[in-house]
Image 1 (cartoon, helix red, strand yellow):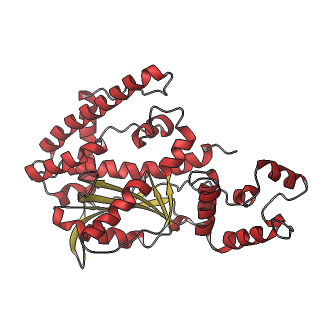
Image 2 (tube, one colour):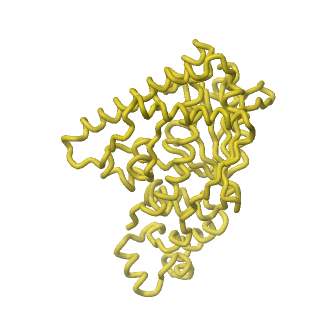
Image 3 (cartoon, rainbow, N blue to C red):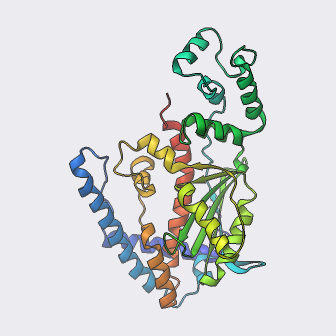
Length: 363
C-alpha cells in the first residue's frame, strides 16, 4: 500500500494498536451463520446488533483517549483542497487491489426475450431454428426491426440497453450487470457517503474509490468535514472527481446516496445531477443471497459472503453520534473509525461486485 505520507502511516499504526486492544475488551469472534429457521431470525439479529453497538461504544471511548490533543491532519495524513465554495479536508490513499471485472456483454445478445413478443417458449423455438442471438434475428420477417434497433443500441448506447433490460426484465437481472463489460476499469467509480441523519441533514463524509487501468490499484478519495460549513465545498470536490467516470457502483445508492447528494446540492441552490450508469449492488445481492442470509446489510454480506469481519468499525446509525462527539469534545479521535468505516464500505463494494457477478443466479 502507498499511503502518501508518514502522518497517515503513523495514524494507521495507532489505529492497529486500538484494534488489538478492542479485541481484548470485546469478543469479536462470534460467528453469524445463515438463517436455518424462522424462529432463529429475531434472536440472531439481536445478537448481531448488540455486539456491534457494544464494540462501537468501547471503540469511541478508546479513540477519545488515544487522540486527545491531536489535530485531524496529524492523525489521518490529509491535506485541504479548495474550490469556489471553500475548503475541505481531503484524504487520498492508494491501495493495491485488482478490479474484479468478471461480466460478459455477449450474454445480452443471447437473450432473445429482450425483444418484445418473445417469451421463453418462442425463444426456444427460434433457437432450435438457428436464431441463437439477437444479431441472428436481424433479417427475420417478424423480429428483424426490433433486433436491428437493439443491435444499434448494443454497439453505441449501453444506457439504452440498460433501460431495455429494466423494462423487459428487472434492474437486478444478471444481464444488467453484464452491461459493465462495455466499460474499462477507469470508467468505474465506487461511492459511499456518511451523513448526520436519514433525511435533510448534512453529509459529513463523501468517499469515492477509483480503479486505475491496468495497474491493479485503487485510489480512494475521502472528503470529510472539519466543520459543517465545509459541506458545499466537499460536495463540489467530490462531484468533480465523480464526473470523470461513466459507471457508478453503490450499495443502496439508488434509494439513498445519489438522491441524498442531489438534495444537498439543492439545499444550497445548485442543480447537480448524477447521471452515470448506476449498478446498485444491494438489489443484485438480494437476488443472489436474499433467501439465505439473516439480512442483506452490507456488514452481514461481508461476514457471510466475503469473509470480512470488521474490528475497528461503527454501525452506520452511530456515525452521527461519533461526529457529534468529535465536535463537542474538539477531539478528532471519533473521525478515525468514521473514515475507516467508509473506506471498508468502498473496498467491500469492489469485492462484492466481483462476487455477485459470479454467483448471481441466471435463468
